[in-house]
Image (cartoon, rainbow, N blue to C red; front, side, top):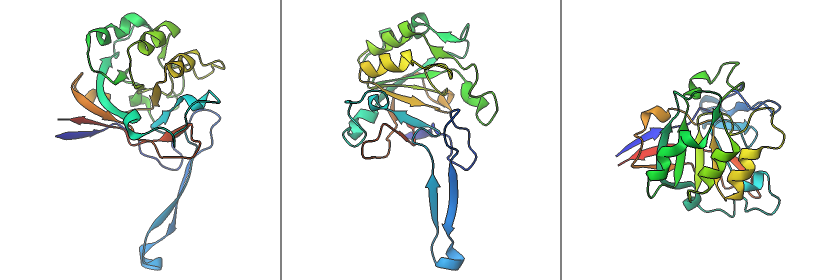
Length: 211
């Protein structure tokens, strides 16, 4: 069994979605001084590699404390979009998923994670068309993951792809990394969020497990 890390490290000054609070990772206790080490974390719930659930946009949707671990664990498949022709992912680009059975999570690999820690990471990344989001919503998945900041453009105010995916009850996992280290199929994907009371999103340690 091989466990592949698909997450970015949380650190002070890490990239955040425009307008979000910057994370602060501060060591408050030191072994030589206090006999133990402890760190204080201050960060928005959508920092780094994280999970969005429908409560992010819908008032009456289940929150993280209502959702169980099974919602964030299952069989995954990778769609290689590194040769995407244009800035928008359409349903034809996702066609390989139609012939896959028993898939719980579709992970969209664009290669955009190579821009992490650069100024261009939150600009002009590939996004889902509304039709592509509907295609994904019709596959009976638990969630969709991507190595980009969002399925919608950074300047979007109506978030159409989010709405479609959430309307189908899907979790959305953003800012994944190293999807190229996974096989295209036959692995377990896990993106367990923190069990936050009334939480709409949470950082996670996303991994792919190849049996």
